Amino acid sequence: MSDVYTDQMNQMAQVSLPDKIKLLIVWAPAIALLTAIAAAKPGRDRVTAVMALLQYAAAQTPVKIDDQVVVMMTKMLLTAEGGALVDYMHSLFLGLAEQQKYAERNRPCCS
Image (tube, rainbow, N blue to C red):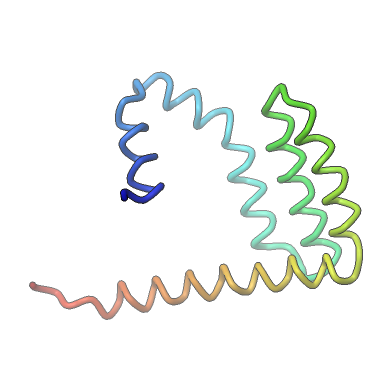
């Protein structure tokens, strides 16, 4: 069974360069929103940044169901538990990034 990442990379290899550029233009705001999440203060600021990303992603589809899900998730994230979940997930991502950096720094130079 192949992994999802490999499948996605194989699919992207088939996409033309102009289409890849169009995708980058469409999703560049999402990258900026991810940066805002990383830089946001814990609590309401970070939750607000996550909500903005969810709303942006939902707006990119013609489907209305994802808009309804975002409304429900917004209500959940604005609770104390929702804010704690966002902050916890943020710390997990930071931990994964640090593990990756450590692995790259300590990779043998020659194999």
